[in-house]
Image (cartoon, rainbow, N blue to C red; front, top):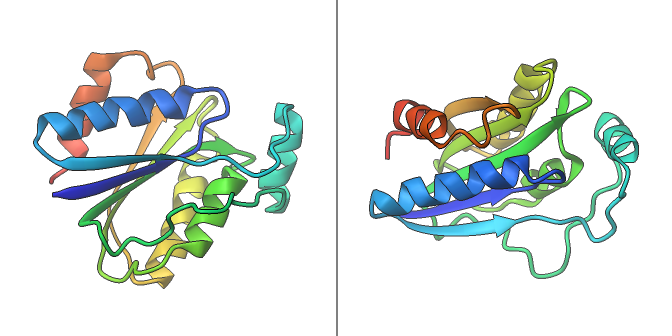
Length: 162
């Protein structure tokens, strides 16, 4: 199965999850592409990042980012939770995605306090469902668990059915 993992990571927590997911999917025999998203201009202070998430501003995708889901049978989108929302670049990416209709999508968020994780997942879900995507799972992972390979494997085995 052809799979895409699109993620954004400022502190590398979401990146660690995405790399663990990549390994998990490849072990299952899936052809998996990893797409690390970066804004064209990225604020270097977390407070500026959080303000951008809250106001839904401050993220522009770079040129050449693949936003077309047509070549994939399953898509994973992973984001940190900032200000009760996905990272602005993830929201921007979702807004630009194409050929989403009937695609199987898994959503993942990483978080510190846990406040806002459900809202962030709901925001991502709503935007993708409006485009016809099918959300198969919404997964939340604490920043305290991102280095725990056994925990991640258990979560992936439980939540991912491809």
